[in-house]
Image (cartoon, rainbow, N blue to C red; front, side, top):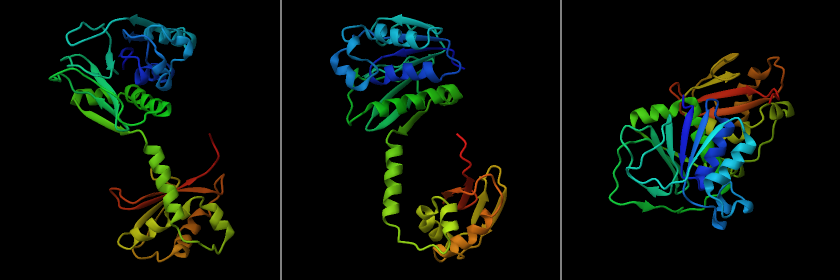
Length: 294
């Protein structure tokens, strides 16, 4: 794992990533902060810096914040502007968060991370050559919660070891930063387009907490395919049943198929419905007991 990491470029993404690595990494022993720039008022909108940091070197301002948060961590500072060919400090992994395109260095464990068009790009290729050095800028609005989400993704890749797999294969990975917003918007649109339903049983309507939002996709999928139902999740199901093709004509059919499976005596009488229309085993429904645990 990566016990020693250098961060090159401590602006928007770099400052958030520094804090997230310190907060979330299980293996981090040393963090090297590399930047030549000072904090300006323009930096405050999209970074960890505050008004008291204006005029300070970014490495100094961020150093103080990390020291106050985790004094036991070894933090080094390097106030320099790295360019192609510049020597790098020795560490397990270099993360380039600058808004500049510089040639990458061959055989050096380095990734380049940046945000473009609402997407986080994690570039793990090496020996990349650019015709000229380009200063970047955000083409879409990037807010602090986008930066926090992006830094959490990167920290997770590092902490789980998946970043090494991407580096070994020299891959570029892209993540949608507005995934959650799109997911919620899609769900709201589906709910708005659902027909009104009269339940035969108040018990059934309350027991399957979010069945209504999936009802139409489930019924449509069943026209051509059987649907496997797992009670308790597919990894360790308590009950596994199959709904035959063309069994579901309407919502009442769906209730009549699922309701008997929920009569088991769990610690909770409520279930969260998860529908996956495309899996190696065909469409599946998972009924996850809502036991209220945090």
